Image 1 (tube, rainbow, N blue to C red):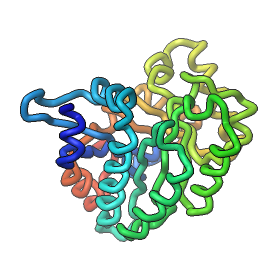
Image 2: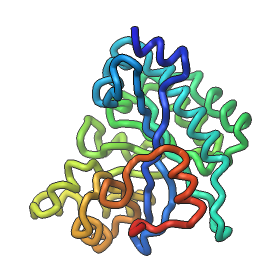
Image 3: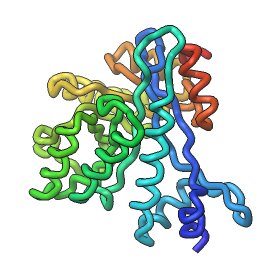
Image 4: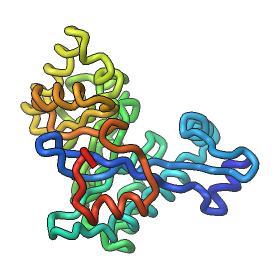
Amino acid sequence: MALRRAIDRDEIGVHYQPIFALAGERLSGFEALARWTDDELGTVSPGDFIPVAEESGLIALVGRNVLARACADAARWAPADGSPAPGISVNVSPEQLAPALPREVEAVLERTGLAPQRLTLELTESAFVSVTGETAAVLADLCRLGVRLALDDFGTGYSSLHQLAGLPLDVLKIDQSFVAKLDDPRTRTIVTATLAMAEGLGLAVTAEGIETEVQRSALHAMGCSHGQGFGLGRPAPVESAMALVAQGARAAA
């Protein structure tokens, strides 16, 4: 009930976690993350309210609101040095992957003026447990809009290599559980194989959950192109994101 009330009152906010190119550590984009602070409940963790939203059928409303706000904010980002404006990544739940999604995305892009190529929609592996003709049509329509598609949390779900080869993806995101165990030779082998596979498929790779310089350096040396995590930059309100963009900040900042 509290979540429904927060959605109706537009109280679900958005924080932005920076994504950096590991070569040179240059800011390349942000991931939009839903945040909720309730008058009675206080700050509610996404780990608590996102599952509630999914179980109650409210996740589509949450996702729609986050998409609209993130695109509107990103449309205002302008680096002071004239470099290309950073992109914005928005998570899409399996429940949102319906025939209406491309029309919703197109309407948001037209309303906000955000260039389609600056928007990346992140889909989890669970969205591709069984790729139906309807799902394939939705993905094809999104591609025709010019937006990018990313497979989030790769290696933690149910996607098969056969499905991966047939999906119109642009980005593969390595889950933080692998990054946290890079000192394990077996985990490094898995990450190395993932990077080689992504290169063969023509996909960019973003590693999640980078917390230390050792992890960043190791991933860069292994050929990972982009990264995000508390060691590079924490999620922050839009004002902080705009300041980061304006100064052309690097991860060290």
